[in-house]
Image (cartoon, rainbow, N blue to C red; front, side, top):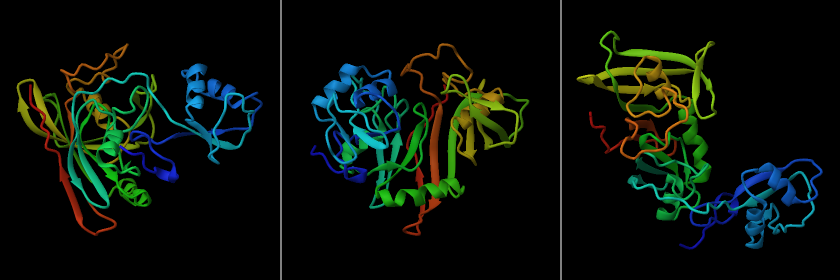
Length: 302
């Protein structure tokens, strides 16, 4: 596929736009020295390869060479590559597309955006390559382990208006989860707590203090020791649904993070997290239409 301009006019390569890093005031001998210190997981040899391939350049479009002297208060752009990336063996389903929105049914295990060990094998990059929309950007995100609906903005200048709907709590979201059944708990109920970043960084924790998260929980179906729950998040804290269910003594089936396990197990595709972003509804700020979308995926009670 031919490269197309990404946000800011910079070209995408295989669906991936360049990453950006700001150069602070400092006394590194060369830009290369700064990059090696700033990104300790990337060896110097890889930066030299990228420079030789013309994949590192400054905000003025000038290529960065290995010996180029350091200068602060400037932005650098570079193209991220991974030496080997295993394909995640599940496919997304395109549910809707117009001039404003793309709505996708995401499978379990697929990240929404590039991070860590995931680049091409992310929903965003897959869609850019598939649809040829270089400026496509997610309006919201769901966990890599969670399946279901993800919305993308087609026009970069419209993304903020859609995100404001989430911030102003004007979006109705409905999830389903399979978790243990505890007959002593009454439903429906509302869970509130203060959620902050825990240890390690990818795990969230509840702490004392004013609540910053709220989830409404309904009991939908009971089958032996398990039940199907309907979850409606009022707020959107990271891992909120998983944290609130765990706090109730209802860890979601196949959750590898709550309860905490050390070390965290690797992915096992046989055991997807039983959490699904099932439906979403809101009034479109550009068309005025009532937008309502539903996932076609189903959680099967074990």
